[in-house]
Each structure stands twice: as structure tokens, then as C-alpha cells.
Length: 274
Image 1: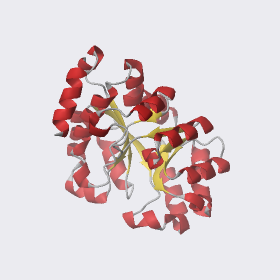
Image 2: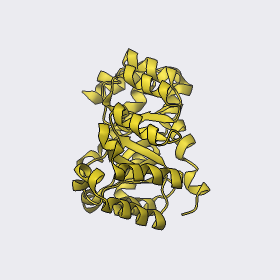
Image 3: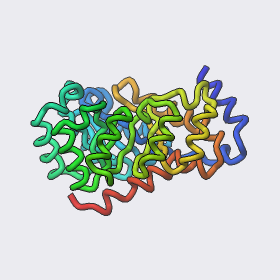
């Protein structure tokens, strides 16, 4: 049914949407240890290429998966360092001082464009370990990819008003709240991974359309491959994304599809040394 809806939308799309398929910058890809075991790097990269993903912001638990994928396709993969040595760290990392040593060791060894995606909510953002992550991002010129509520985002910016934050899933906040936060912070960007409310049934929601039109340079898309089973969805997600983007002016659609990601992350690895 979803494929049928996407097909109908494409038939009704403006003429520009029938040209070459929009490239996709996927701002939320994971390639964790269990996925590496089931989907070798070559196969994972093949799926990204099939989806028309020209760049992908990739993190993993642990970081070895990201490094394997980056080694396979450095022209596509943009590594982000998660503060998780294993998935179990998701619920404990903000209280685990050993995480800091882990991050510092990886930062000495490899190159990244961001720290995250990490989960932190409310007052957790003021924990010493999280404060150190904010400091490391500032020290190394990295983005913070935060799976957070608005309260935690506020707290991160209070620690470093110049921080650059990519808000994972746009905080699962309603579009009005997302617009409020983007107005408040000039160095906050939002991605739409694992959300459907912005385009229910493949048709762009009016309130979300208003948000995207107000901030065409502040949104990105993402799949969120949190498990091996999510990886084949990279192709379907890219196609469905092109469907609802066709409801926007061409320039806005291109920005959200890939130009914003390229502008923010595309040259970071070439301009930095380890």
C-alpha cells in the first residue's frame, strides 16, 4: 500500500520531480556490531548506493562498525562517534566515567564529524560525563547528534552557546515546538528519522510544510537503522522521502534531501586532521 501511495504521489508531482531522482543525505544511520555480523560492509554500502544515498552520517555501538563501513566507502560515510561501547550503555552512559576515556581514545585514533547519536533527556544533560562530551565536541570542532527532549537541548546550549547540534528525530516534538527551538538557536538543525507525522500516507502535513518552508536550510532526513532488519528499509525510505519532498519547491526539496547535509558535513573530514 505504501508503495502504491508513493507511486500516486509521484504521478501528481511537479515536473522537476520526474527528472533524476534526488540524491539523499541520510543523517541517521547506525551500523552496530550485530548488524556487521549479518550485513557485511560491502552489502551495506550496496544498499546505500541502491537507495541513492550519496552521503550518510554513521554511528555504531561500538565504533568498530562505523570504522569498517568508512573503510569500505569513505566517499559516502561520515563517521560519528557514539558514547556507547555496547548497546547497554544507552541507559547508563551519562553516569559512567569510563565513557570519557573511551571517547578520548577513539578521538586520538580516528577522524569524525560528530559525537552521537546519544540519548540524553532533561537534567541528565548536566551530568559531568555529558558536560565532557560537550567540551570534547567544542575541542575537536564536532557536531553533537542528540536524541533529546527540548529541555536537554536547552541545557546543552547553556553549556556551550556556540555548540552545533543536530537534533535526532527533531526530538519527536510537534512541528510548532521544532519551529520554536529553531528560532531560538541558530546552530540547531533537525532531522526527521523514524518519524511519519510529517508526511502521513506519503502526503506532507501542512504544519510540517510550514516548518520546512520557514527553515529550509535547517532540516535533514534519516532512516535510523538501529537494527539489521532496518537496513533494507534504507531504499524504501529514500523513495518515500522523494515522494513527499515533491510537494515542496525544487530548491527547498534539494536542500532537505541532501544540500543541507553536504553544506554542514561534506568537507569536514577533508578540512581536519586526526
